Image (tube, rainbow over all chains, first blue to last red; front, side, top):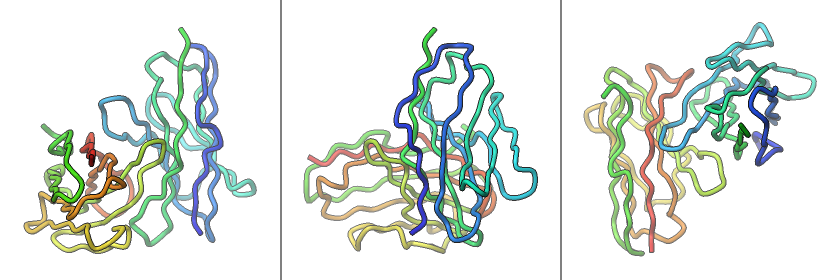
Amino acid sequence: AQSVTQPDIHITVSEGASLELRCNYSYGATPYLFWYVQSPGQGLQLLLKYFSGDTLVQGIKGFEAEFKRSQSSFNLRKPSVHWSDAAEYFCAAQRAGSYQLTFGKGTKLSVIP
Amino acid sequence: GAGVSQTPSNKVTEKGKYVELRCDPISGHTALYWYRQSLGQGPEFLIYFQGTGAADDSGLPNDRFFAVRPEGSVSTLKIQRTERGDSAVYLCASSPQGTGELFFGEGSRLTVL
């Protein structure tokens, strides 16, 4: 069955520190991959997406993600975290030709001032 | 507003009652989706509309759930004979086409007592 796994339920980092959120997928073929952020009182917002091509993808708010086929991973990174980045982050995948997104369970990010 | 609008934001009902949740997508977006997010979980796909027709309703959990989009814009998710297990946040999203970036609303939180 197709699935997306986010191993970390909750991560706490200090403001200014670097961040990496992990995501692994299990699909028959490489799916389209996404990272969304959900802040309190706001809808899910797309940070970045990977369809094909360059495996390092740049997104909004200074985030980037790297696709690694050999590890079935699509980890999200940010070099320096800001307090406003505190939110819940969801990795999602979509099989080519499908309209369904499969989401991971999310990683809650807390930022210490 | 320019975003996806969902009403009501909160709905409390009693077991066995009928509920309607409304979604007003971004103007011009032909694709509309419903997802359900239970506590501690990522969003789960329910149904996808392209225009007025339900192109994929494979995520609807059972025949108590039904959704319509009669004029290709506003959509209503209908739940009959509600059960306590239906308690969740129901998310609506729209997009200009079937793949790529989804724009999510803030959700309708349904509580079944």
